[in-house]
Image (cartoon, rainbow, N blue to C red; front, side, top):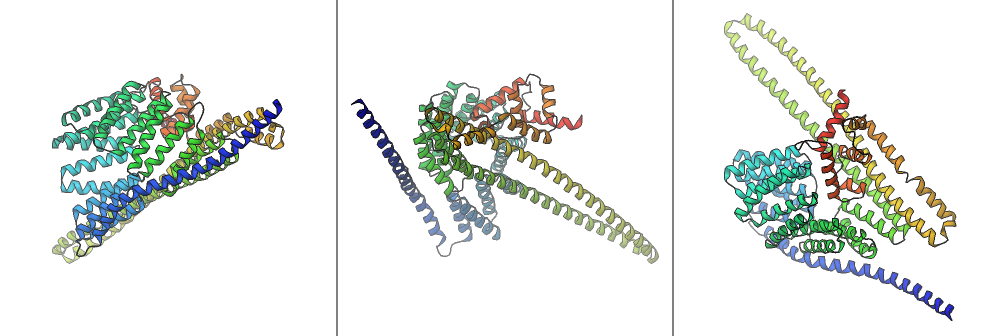
Length: 623
């Protein structure tokens, strides 16, 4: 009797498993259907506004000034929906204004194109457009617009991690704001400078700027500024692990964002709160804030924000003691679909990596390996795109410099000819014989000078080309080293997870005796030797930066092996997010590690960790 009962229970479990699998598949398709229906409703409202602008364009007797203005407004509407379309519209507006000599329209076009380029991550191109805009604004001397142009350039350099240039332009914007008595503008730039200092690890100095900005914003009662300043203070306190103050700062920032119904910033602040509570170990509270952020981004149809929020939610679900793989997979399917449709390669690569972990956690190792392969192919594609963009930028700079040098040489030749012509006219009055003799001498001198200058110019160009070639080779080695580091770290982490799951399965089943199982385990062991991988990376690193570890250990003998590795990652210009991925910790922990590392090394407040390490690396060739 007992045996029959057990058999019946076993059959019930099997049937329940099969039904659950079918229901899971149905749920995935249902989620996709609901998401598509939801986005269709949101897009309808935005489409109505776009259609109304298009109707204006089709009107008769439309002036070119109005056409350029409508094109610019359409570009801003399409910026989040279709960046390529937005760029096309903004370029048409700019060219039309330029053709009709509409100076204000030209400046608006430059500003719009620069904004689109910043949003799509093309900071080098954005820098060029913003510099053209700044030159026009400085010529026109409309100081409020000059202040904004300085601030825009500061923001671009901040995104490029060129902090000295960012502070330079922010400071010029601050001077103009103070000369105009623009309190809101002054507080805004003070807050922007504090962001640069936070990235530098100069937290005390950043607090000083934020305190000054907060006093001004409370005086002017600007909700937008109060929101931004409290948000920055929340970030500082989060890094220093003053969690109660951090939560209070973010909550105040959220209050002011809700007053202005700024859904984008409401989403950003909710994400900060989600990260804060996850760092404190409160995953449920963290999840609620991340879901609030997702709701806000969906309300304005911010595709990039939606995908980023869903990735944050997935990381929360997977960080728990008992990971919620089913829920995580549903969010990842939606995020992956949207990232593919809108060309978000970086987010798509993260979705693929997380899907690999989810399928691994669900025991589907074949699918996990498939997602891992897709991730590796996409990462290689992203690296190739970045390399091609860098090479194109270097080629553009070289061609521009070459043309400028040629124009300068031609101008000098013209000036020289004009000077000689003046002397020849003078010699005519002194006599025909004197003119002929002096003219011949002058001609010989001119030819010799021209040849000498030509030789010097060619020599300089050759030296420049050699220097650029050397820099290209060095940059390529650095990029190759960075790519290898990230790839090996991700590969080892995934393989170790798979190995743990296989060992666990072998203890509960008879699969450990099969040839396939032994073959897979052996293959994984051969590719998860972390010491060998670090030695390989260290060998490549020493080729690019010889004797760096020796000099670093000599200057700071108390550094541990992990801290030496962290210094190497900083010297390789890895971002905080990339180091967090390698060390399997969150971004705020990396920032805190750098802050503590800087204190341990006794680096002065005004000197960044990156600058200090580069000085050690540069001193190697001077010994």
